[in-house]
Length: 225
Image (cartoon, rainbow, N blue to C red):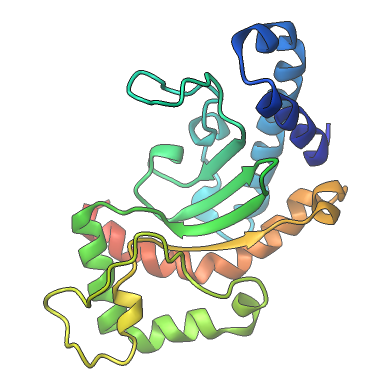
């Protein structure tokens, strides 16, 4: 089963998001899940070729469950409308470290790399690291192989004013207002249909490896990993 076939199942599920339909098509879900599990395992192997820390990561720790927690949600649909995996050391999908994310969704498929929603102490440390090492950070984000795929960091939840403790005239002040040090690349149908899908997205991830290495140095120092 290819990435596009995984997408076809999740599209059908999103159009029939109820337990009755899911149980009737449980075998199709199991096939799609197995395919996504295998894809994730292969992706880990490909990423480990340039990021050796990923070598011993277990795919099962990285893949998000399809079942939604609806206990405190107004949306009572029982299943997510996407497959997703976050490949990172020290916890996989629960890791606080920067890593590699894949999102397969009928509303849009994409990959992302970096640190999403770091805890307050980590976010403060990352902002400080960016400020103190701005030349190195700019070199990473302006490198040609990086800009071939990534244009900007997530702007979601960005604060309006520069955080306390930093000079207001800092030339890269916008970088210190970020809540997520993560970049995204949208996947098109041609890539999803490709026999070399995993290798192609791993090559894009490779361009983001220097960013993750920069972020994880600070995260590890903060967490004392």
